[in-house]
Length: 126
Image (cartoon, rainbow, N blue to C red; front, side, top):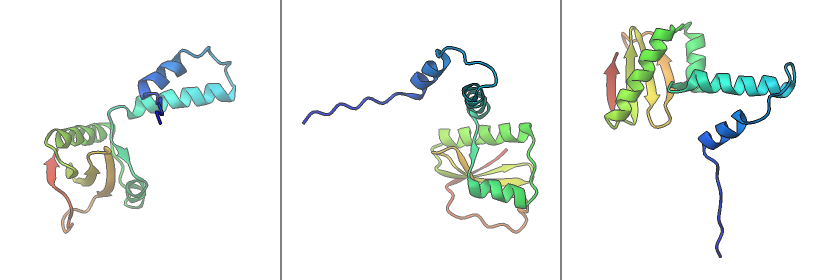
């Protein structure tokens, strides 16, 4: 039995969305299309934060500057280049465990004086 499956790449989907005729302002489609493109632009090349990490940022009152987020993303890229899978990334006085493959921050810690980190295969101090 020969079954052919055709899957569109993200680039193909973006091209389709961008080539759609413009929608009128105020319509739900306009809001959705604009939001989609804004999210795509905002997250391109950046690490994502898991639900758990987001909760940790909130409960520990951790506010990150754009510069710190950029340094965190750069460190995740360095970890990927070195072949790491689960990495500890230090940015200033903040520590993050990053799943390098999925480019996702798993948890965040702001009290690193007595912290213990397990199941990591590398660390980057940035």
